[in-house]
Length: 159
Image 1 (cartoon, rainbow, N blue to C red):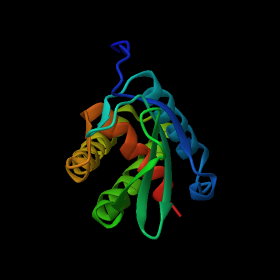
Image 2: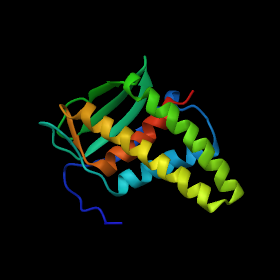
Image 3: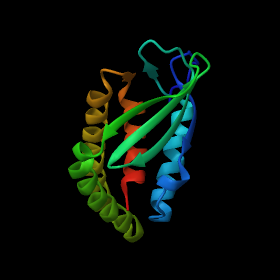
């Protein structure tokens, strides 16, 4: 992994709104924690006309994912909100694949784990690409940052 070289265009802190967190499973909680830690370690996140670094709070509300973004260059946080509906099919399929993946991990069947993981990565990439396109007019992110943010969106979307 390439070590993060700090610039002003990155997320330096991420909070998840506690009201948005639904306990799903230890695996989902672990994925959320890993995604947050990886994002803090390395990311590219740039809001047009706003200098970072940024503090990001994620929450779900009214079938939307909301990114509240604070920065020392802002008087008050700005809200970037996206509909969850474009993600529903990907999230539904990703949930089924992840359940199969976690079950396969328990059995230790390596060929099955590898096959499921390829499908899981494909859906993860699809969700990340969708996130990049939905944010394109407000926020610039790279694919690795988008993948980690998609993991957080997935974990918050679960009810």
